[in-house]
Amino acid sequence: MLAVAREPMTETTTPAPEPAPARPLLTVTSSAAKVMRDQLARRGTPQAAIRFGIRGGGCTGYSYLFEFEDSPRANDHVFVKDGVRVVVDPKSMILLKGTEIHFETGIRGHGFRFSNPNVQDSCGCGESIAF
Image (tube, rainbow, N blue to C red; front, side, top):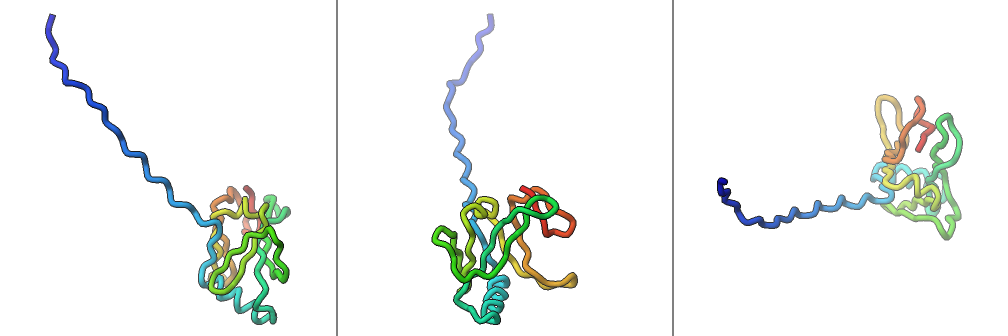
């Protein structure tokens, strides 16, 4: 029989991976906040808020709700960017977590754009979404 020299076994540990940074619940860019602030002022209600949410409907199942809100509800999530309040109801917040609201101006027009990481499908016109 051959004798095999064996090295003593040593235990090695692999450091745990760094946790992913927490994604903000909602991000409003400065360009979006400026347009919202201007629209609220033009409406004559600079102290009002913008309601952002999800409602049923559209060809793929849901659509975004984006409107003026004079009386936010007690259970709304409230986000403030550059002096503008954006309110989201708790049920919509589940589907909007991580969304960025941006205002774009370009060759194809201008408007608010919603970058929502939870969306799995959307229709051709971009007005309807599915989760």
